[in-house]
Length: 141
Image (cartoon, helix red, strand yellow):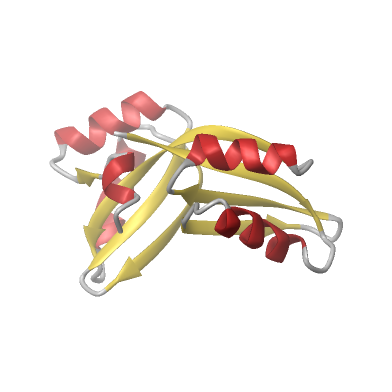
């Protein structure tokens, strides 16, 4: 139930994100979700792609600093309070969330979560009958 996420170090320079989009597109790799955390000098692009290992190779071949980490993908209703329910469950279980980002469409939302304890986070969410997406399911969205 874990999903591979790429983290790419980017200089804050015009066209860097465009270049990544072009490289991945040319390699027939789809970007399913992404977020950018930045400061004045650089940013960290985190993204979920259709072929993470291939994407990492393509980006490294083009001199990008990139790493692969595992994250959890929570699939929940896209309505008020749904995410609060999941967050309360994780907080009550002592799970610390390092970062998260989300994307939604229609009645469903997908929340990418990077907890301090991946396995425990998965166990807690499953025990509480919350829906997690496997990588293969996420890449179809």
